[in-house]
Image (cartoon, rainbow, N blue to C red; front, side, top):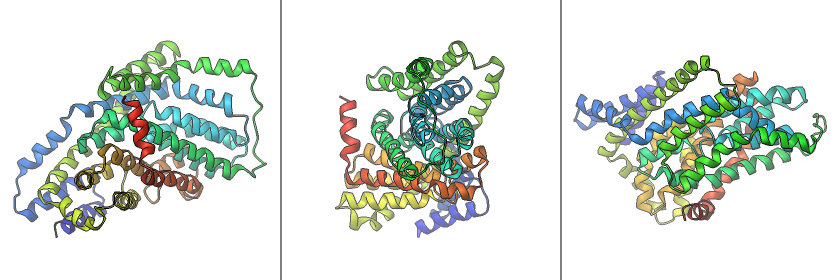
Length: 427
């Protein structure tokens, strides 16, 4: 019955148009009333404890690094680098979008920010070259959701804090699956473009121009290598890596590329602060409902429903991934992570599934939810930036949504694709 109270109060508050964070608090209050332990101090204490967590300091710093990266010219040079090397292929701008998305994902960790930057840079070029714009917008949206999987990932930070899982291991474990997501998009783009003859192709630039673009993007490309290398060799923690990313993107944008202006700093910091406030309030509110879900034994009740699958890890993972995929169509990324993590983690541990492995697939699944209708936040971003109707973007994204879903379920079937690269990186 507590599960019914939980779902009814949460979905009812959302149906009334209440913001997710407040809906989570209402859900917690409903559970307290149901259990007969109403105490406002519990709500206040859990709100404070939810936000008072050192690893969460990485969130505002990575968001600020993303702002500096876009304003300081790092994003533009990454696109120019990819354009110089693969722009001459048939459908070359699509390959540019994927390669640029992979590189930018290792810089900011924000799907919406990466998608907005890529769409604003590439959609005008694609439109001029005669590309199918809804399909191109769908590709860019699908490329943008690689950001929560490849480190530095804000999603991994939130999951690591909520689930008590090593954020460093999550970061390192996400590298290869994120790369596979990019490869799946390359294959899907080749498939949809193989008979396309009407788009304009770019001439292969002379080697000196390609080398010039590579040299010009050197400082932008060095940033992900520095972050991943520092994490692998234990030079800094994920939180310290976020601070380093801010300092690096600021110095490169301000003094190397000289595109980041002093006058723009206030607006960039304000934008990062607003986004941080939303994320942190969600995290704090989620801890209220998470504490009460645990007190009400909702994970135990759900565990009983999944008990027939407990002896088969593969089938259990498949069922949980389907559940997350369905929930992700209706909820945004952060709320889904914060609501389902305290529910599913006890089941994961009871079944003997590696929490890091589960975390990678869980975050990848939630990232895919960013491009699934009807909510699809990233679809809304690319629709607004590209000025393409939402319905057209939804039609255009389907081949790439299917490709990334195949990767997700391939990782369920073959866990070593996640765990073997992680073992190599942590040696």
